[in-house]
Image (cartoon, rainbow, N blue to C red):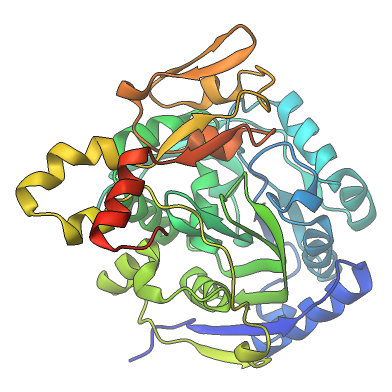
Length: 388
């Protein structure tokens, strides 16, 4: 039996022109019952976008302001009080938030639509009946919402494989506490299961994935823009991700968060797609992020050799010294404090690195790369495997 909400709308949108985005979103939400099915007069609506860091939306690390504008406009028109709230990585204070809002082009959006931008950086610890989490610190505005609109960006992800609606909810954790959560949940399985706990707790009622322009390659922060020309909307974060990730060729079993949600009975894995034909929007050569796991090693090498060789074969962050400006963001966001700034350049001490790739995610200069050493390349040749 299909879980409630496992319907998703997929619509073509080939530009961030405000009129085109508004028309596309209106059409998508129309397939889901229209805006009146979500927004009511007096309702406290919190828009939770992906604003992972201070970034120009053209780089595709953050949601485009036209998408946020389209949602806010329709919610305010229906008498809702709309607040945009996000906790990016790194320092979480009003000055940092204003800089992120300004870089993302949201100051004029707020003025035009009547949407409020959040500057309250308080949080509360709440009990969470999850599989990995028993409690969680959540930014206060999310806990006071009558309805949460989750607006994600379609991106590849070095740790989690894919970043969309489910992964976007990791941003409800305040500031640098995200680094602590990375430290506590170092494996892909544990981290992904923890994010599913968060998604199941927040339960966003409307999930939108900005896939007009996506990020491919070394996402979620250091990849490259890729045209997809789509918007996805769904009452289910899992369904929204299944459809948007499917446009890039990802199967559900390849996405740890969706696979775990399905195992836990939170997602059936079957989505009714309304709107445009997915095949007409599919990107056949979408570039995936390098993965930190040693799947080739595990499948080609005798079991007793896997553990001794893992550290040699592991995908690890490396500093591109020519691109590094010594800003220190990587050092501040590193969960295990294994990065220092020497001579205006970042230096990563590899022995303590847990391969969470927070440094790669938050570096504003793309000065961190995900690399394997020469032994991995030699193993590829010996085993006849293919580098992914």
